[in-house]
Length: 307
Image 1 (cartoon, rainbow, N blue to C red):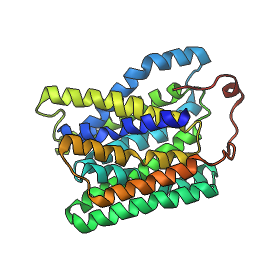
Image 2: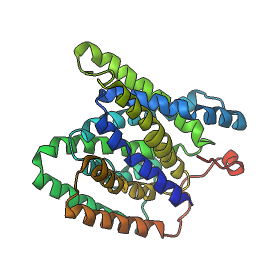
Image 3: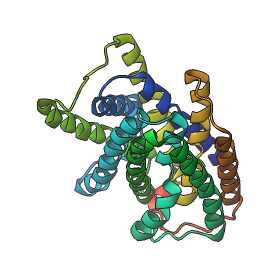
Image 4: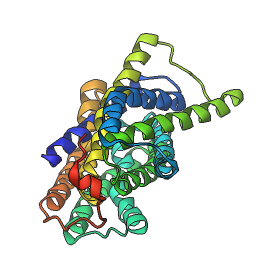
């Protein structure tokens, strides 16, 4: 069941590239809007969880959420910029190459080592990444800059996911994601305020108001509330590298959506890459759970967090 919910969350995240490319709002402002809406949509669940767990914010909690909030803001801004500079399938693939970086962030921050099935699954998945990345560079060199921006976004995303894995001791996922979303929106708005005097922010909102409002609402509701929140929840129940490999399927969903919406026909090697990533995911999902590398706090044993 956890896997099925995660797949739905991955699909929800994959829709972001469609709404981003429809929108003409400045990347920093678009990031702020979607994060504010994401936090507001989930605020009732946060308030209920806060009352249920008698949870109060303190300095220790603030120190926990500042890094992931900063990572998320940087990831969203760079992801929007990169997604507008390269084809949808390639942008989504590169930004979700987290299985490359996650073994390092998981080990250095959590001492979470890969299992043998995770190593095998990662190699299969990354062979698809390499196939698509090399083919894209040879066929479309003009997308190289966009690919590079997406790669930086991927590195920040890996840190964000690792922070979510590290903070799974917070008793409810809502108590974690809502403060992270809202604090990340503050970081984005602060960046926009600093950039405005220098003309670095082009459009506070795009010219077609109705289309922009639709894109902003869709980004807040689908890839943020349903997508990122579910992925954060899954990191409480599945190992970090397993979530990273399953999350790589975003590029498959995004490629299909881009074909339907933008008539971008994926090249034959795209489907080969998809097959390799699917094989990698099947390998890691079928492994026997090796146990939790980090102890859970006593209060979480009594009440399990649900998305």
